[in-house]
Amino acid sequence: MSKANVKNLDYLAAKHAQGLIGELGENAETPVTKALGVLQENGVYACFLYLYAREKDGGKIAGKMVDLLNEALLKGEEIRSENSKEILENVADKITGKGIERLLLARELLEQMLIYARYGAKAAAGNEQKKNQSS
Image 1 (cartoon, one colour):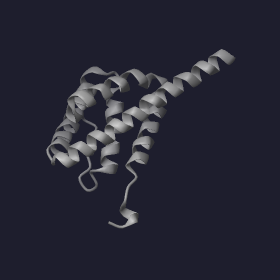
Image 2: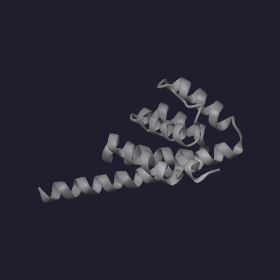
Image 3: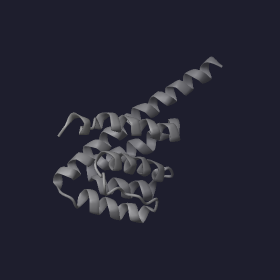
Image 4: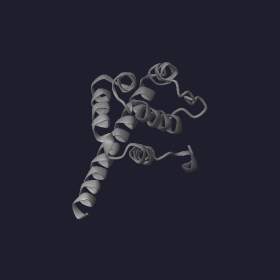
């Protein structure tokens, strides 16, 4: 593989975490932390299920997760739907059903993104609090 084709997955996780914080701001900390817990305890598919079933902003979080997977792992077979049922089917087929290597890489990548998003949300909340105190 040439150097031109090598992707910096940590950079992609950080970029998509920043995008999520840009959309949700300081309100992201609780749902992102819960999603991270589900991902770590129950896996990729369970995390998507949780986000669609239990979180108000779950669709936005899941959307950023799909964007990351599309950019990092799914070139040529991207998930193109906005429909939660179709996204869940695609995650099952293209991530959990394509071998343990892809599943573990997806899990690690999503975990890193959610960790960055959680810290980003904490920083956003801290900045907002400092701004309110100085006013």
